[in-house]
Image (cartoon, rainbow, N blue to C red):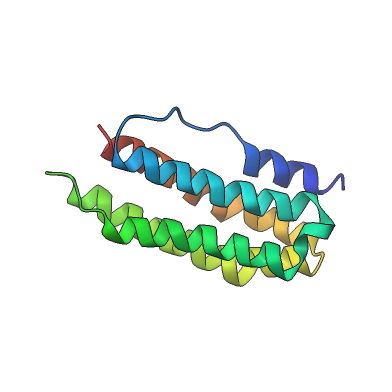
Length: 133
């Protein structure tokens, strides 16, 4: 468990305050998806098929919501960057991070979570905050 503490800290890290608007709602959905992944990390019993489905479904909900949104006036570049960053985040989560967690590969999961995934998640938060202004 000690090796997972840095991963948990990163996954549960500080969050941005919610602004009022469409992207604040999206941010809330990202938070739910992150919480479900953290549950999988923390509790071995929650690495079953049911939790794997919840982890996948919550990430899919973010993607579906993002697909319905439109770029605010004058912010199409930021919106495009948000979509691309989320898609890369989700792909890495599904193809590398979750499999590492399920395989008990703590160091690999920690490296992924503390590396590129942390950067991408922070970028998504910053873009959602900017887009909701």
